Image (cartoon, rainbow, N blue to C red; front, side):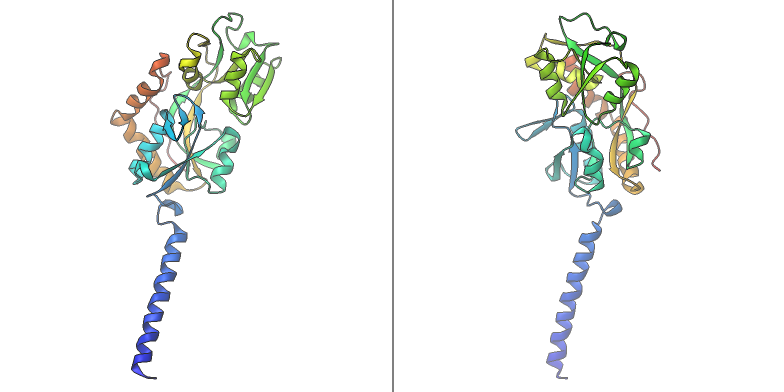
Length: 279
């Protein structure tokens, strides 16, 4: 075979090999457990003031700050984060189908959820409480909910908890907490139940000033974790280390104050938390 032809074949072979290598690296992701850590898809809530709020493409809240800090430690700059809406009922599906790499969305760590996804954290410990109209003094805690119309969100642990706590409550599940708040203000329901952090965020909003109040009698413990693909211990460990660093360098306290301070909210017992080991 002529030398010129041999040389051409070698060049073609080199190009093919390079292309194959590029495809392989792309498929593997190049990061922890196949995750590209230079660009992350992170699921958050879009309608929770003080925690995860999307206002015309501007994302704010405690969960957003925690997620941004974690992403930075993983090597992802803020402009490389793709924020994905993660309603309560869809969080496991988003993770399992690779639509997100992480979920930081007031995501309580439970044994049932750990069967489907892995968690890093907790990064915050909240407690379930009640939000009522400011002029309604008939609801003083879960023991006064019998016969009342109570709103919660489909797929949340809050709905499950309150049904066990008060079997006689008239529970109405909505798609989002913002829908519950609107119904509460319009007197379509008597109270909203979820984590005290979420309730404080709504009560602090300008349009609800003086109209809503948090009862202030929490009746559960909610450990907020970062959800990720089940079994990805490498990524879980990296996220856990980032949470620890955020707490240790003061960024955690700053994020809490900046996002929940307006509602005079004080983190409850156990905060700042000690993240559990990944398994």
